[in-house]
Amino acid sequence: MEGSSAETSPAKPLWRRIVDFPLMAMLVALALLVLAYAAALLIIRVLPPLDQALNIVAQAALIIGITLLVYKLAIRHLGDRRRDDLRLADAPKGLGIGLALGAVLFAAVVGVAAIADVYNIIGDGGTSELLKALVTMAMVPAFMEELLFRGILFRWLEEFGGSWFALALTSALFGLAHMFNPNATALSSFAIALEAGVLLGGAYMLTRDLWMAIGLHAAWNFTQGWIFDVPVSGTDQHGMVEAQLSGPELLSGGAFGLEASLIAMVLATAAGVMLVVLAVRRGQLVRPWWVRRRLAREERLEEAAPA
Image 1: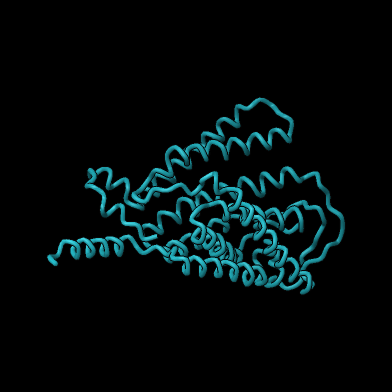
Image 2: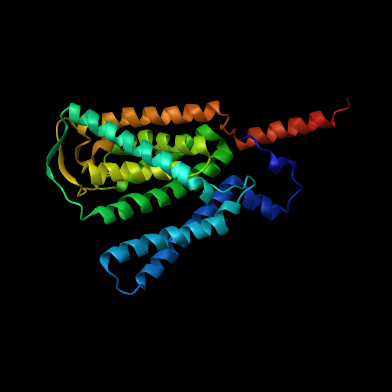
């Protein structure tokens, strides 16, 4: 991951060097993402009345479709180290692995919580909310949040300050963003930063695309909300069972849900650390921008030195 195309390419005009600088490219990408989302919302507002199920699907398709189009046409072409983190050919494998890992991981969290007697099924739920859960709890949040936090923020923060800088800062920002959720506390935001920030950041570092992280995020949300009836980041859900959390908040997560529990923090963070370790072992660590420039300069001087 130590490509030096920016240092060895022909000199570019000043304006292009400014636009291609990692932090500037990140700001442009953020602006494009906001415009894409705003355009989708404007179109949704003028949609004719539809059946509820069709309306849910149409809105999700517009949000994801327009955002993906803007990503393909513009965002992926920004910066010196251009790449496509949403290659469609990689989607089946990445999504499959992410979906499986996310479902198994949260099932393990619930299993430990049940053994500790802080999670109990108290009745039957229903399947009427299945489509809504798939779309509004899993698909759209997973796609949009991963594109924002990993596909834009992590990508260009890493190009500027290196992998460790990007992992730490995007994890903190991800936790901070969840501070505004219902029933959020300082502890729940810290838990999200630690467990989800490291887990999803590790998935991105390992695969160098967004599909595994999207699958992980979607399955984590869907499994906890619809299958186990656990609040998703503080928002109460209607699942296929009716469940209750009780006992010490350190184990149950309180009103925020199991994401704020010590159980999730330990299990999910451990899984995230494993992904990061695998990424490092596979040589996926990126050095800071100024270190890459220094090394490239030293390499050029060595090549230019007389034998």
